[in-house]
Image 1 (tube, rainbow, N blue to C red):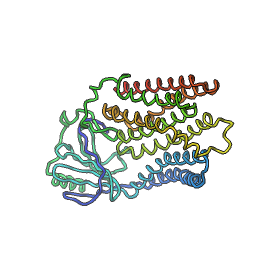
Image 2: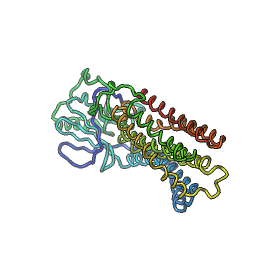
Image 3: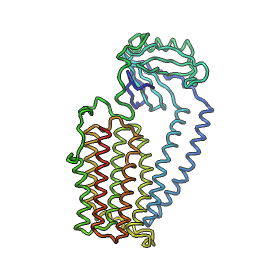
Image 4: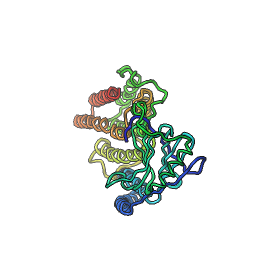
Length: 416
């Protein structure tokens, strides 16, 4: 599909009778394709069922940090893995029970594909449809599964619907569509204005008509920008904790792990913005693999910096872990507000969502988080070797602030 020129209006629809013409079109099914997909679906479902049983067992009896991390990791892995079987099961249901519905009313033609009660619809302006015709594919092609079917041109794209039709049914359907739409479907080439312009919105973008200032007019962020200042202030909280409240390296490392979780939370919000309906799949998949990464990462931080390798004997006390986070709630709140301000002021306010899709957004946190934590681990190792003096700890925090701010500004410049 070419993303230029005229585009239909897509929407999720509840299939119910209404005014105008409504036809349930023949839907050709391939037993071989159904059998192959069902086999693949079963192969993917077996690990999901096994992991579900393991995760349920872990959640029913965890009493230490190690047990909790194991349960979280299995649950996150299951969440990410389940997207595959979910998609295949949905496609299999469409192949088994799906149907195409064509509706026509004055000035508009709507094509729906889905299950008997719900589906995805595309609405076309009947006055801009061209060359409604019957086609029978010759040889193998991407459309040969349809057999005889209907086609019309809309902007730069050819739209196909129906299957297993014959010439007489096609003629009758053409007359019925024109009568219900109240227009004669024109023939000929597209007008220049029907082919010009790229699609400004789609499954992974917000509509171009969103009432916000043009992205081209954005000024670059600087150290004095509100979001940069909010980021600096939020990062100064652990400095105050280390200098005046006696925070240790373990407190700072746990805090920065929690900041990674905060970044992940706001990234899910970004995925929802750029992905829209696709975010229903992309969001859980991101939560799955990011959650598994974060669970193992916390176990690493806790073992190395909180308890020490020699201090783990009981698997980690959950009450002690909860106390770590409760003690630093002001810092956690400051970081949450800082990243939230950046989301609203930059991602939405400065329209940084433009030109991005859910795939880009799912991978964005990793480049920042992985490198940031490499810096912290190296600095934390130095602090452990030197016995944890406050000046070295402050140096580690300062290095983290510098990298955080640098990554923040670089992201804004790339999107500008």
